[in-house]
Image (cartoon, rainbow, N blue to C red; front, side, top):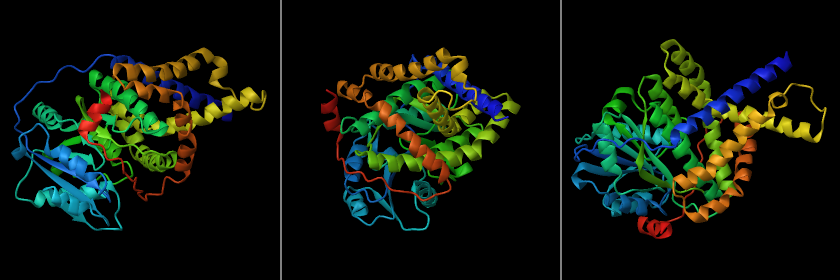
Length: 410
């Protein structure tokens, strides 16, 4: 019985790996050009901030200089349980400082939910709600593209995610490589195939009417994935805008990144438990591959969890022949499984090449396998602590402005 269970599990993981590899073939070409519209949509630009006095000023300056009519957007910084000068700096820059104090309900999801309720009370209402993190920088044309997408009928939009500090350390470089791969071979294929895209936590835009209709309600440790799944369940496809970028600051040290990734994985386990079977069943009943694909995506954390266990078994078998008698799919068709593994790794530098990554970032490919291996203990620990809903703050201190990024790129 155990032998059959192991074989079925391996077959499922092999199918999912092959499916994800197949999707990448639809990422080789860019999405079609979208219709252009004159600026007409109004936006509330929300910035989630907890003790971000070091970086919030640079983002506000960046947002105030966007290439969009200034009368069509307002900037609100959610100063969530701040004990530093975040609110003062925000007011000094002439934008709204929305101070929230609730130590019992901590985290970005709760802060957004509170902010939206405050926003609906205001005299001025907006067509779209845009969300950023305080450590971000934004392409000058960001609102132009969000305006185009809303006018084209999109209701939930994710912009291209890039890294603000890719060459600060091997950790930030590894995150940058992951972003290049995700933009080109995870998000772009789904756009080209008409599947649902997935929110990335920042650089998000929402139709106000939708948020008023269904509420926010995403208060898990991965509120972006949770809201994506809620939308897809309701038949609303989040879309992806390849043409405008948000630059996210990644933690410099391995310890800080491990803490952040642990929070993500704990949240991913929760979302998978809540949405995998309902979405899968809905997709089968409705004949909707959009929902089936979303269900598979929601379960990626379990794919990674069980995949790492099987990989470790393979390694032990290689070192200690005869250690385990269970049938491993690798024994039946090693060429197939090795091809999938090698192909996925080869796609990393290819995605960097296509996305025109800075030449300095390529050197981090050497340590990237170590970065990926580090997800294993994090995922294991997250599996056994997934009921821990305590939000943890990632400190941001790298103050970079858009003109500095342009110099680095050149």
